[in-house]
Amino acid sequence: MIAAVSGAGCSRTVSPEIRYVPAGDLLDIVKDFQRLGREDTYRFPIPKDVTGVNIMKATLVRLDDYEKKNPGKFTDIIQFNKALALERLREYEQAATFYRKVAETEGRLGKEAAKNAEILDSFLLILDRPLASEDPFEYIKGLDEKVIAWNQLITKHQGTAYEFLARVEEERVDRAKVAFVEANRYRLKEGNQLVILGYTQLSTKHRQSKNIYRFLLDFGDFYELLAKEYASQYDPESLSFDLKTFELFVKSALRLYNEVARVDGILEKIEAQGKIEALRGLLEKTTRLSR
Image (tube, rainbow, N blue to C red):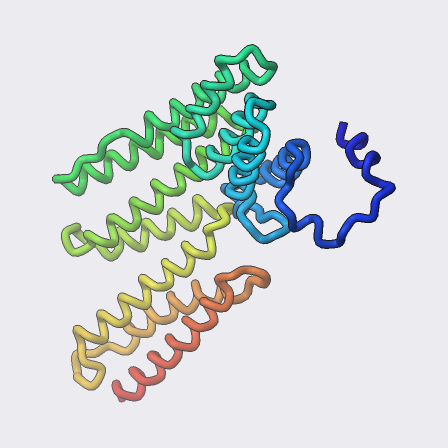
């Protein structure tokens, strides 16, 4: 069908800018979306279309536009692809609603839509689980239970798109756990060590994630924070200041920043380079004061 559409227009002169015009044909919209929309969004960012726009968001706009111009045509195909785009944007409730609408039809997509809606319902059950707000340890326990639940879905849906969607959700909970411990480190016994352990586990477990460089920068930022807190607590010009302790925090941060700065083609590289220069300046100034 695609070949037939392509062949039908081969005798015309096509403007070089035509690819930037919003697609008016449903086949073109769906074809481009399915070509770019299959990426593993745990390992890779959501792809951009030729105009540089998030392909999921762009597809939703184009499907809405097509639907307005062609009311009542190919409703099941439109709703099914809207659901696909929405679930990859983590809008699971909206996606499940569209899947259920498709499942109610007698079209060939009905069975698959019903199955997908059921899977997304299991996602929503985990997301909607309440977390204890009074006791920090109960809150962490609740997060751990969510991680276990997501891990079970990862195993259950291995080899499908729902595996990487579940990995995205598991990763978000793991990051939230570290953020919570960091925010409450003064209330916890050996809180700083717990944060370091949390970042270590996060960056090890999610080494394949698209967010790994962000995690490494955040980990480095925490070591930099410890260095600054130490210099604030113990005046570098005083006898109580231990330069080796300060340097230990700084070197740990620089190691993480340098790991990111050595990687080409990532947005975090420039940020890491800036952090390295700033931290080296802090180290030089503090070293001079401590002499």
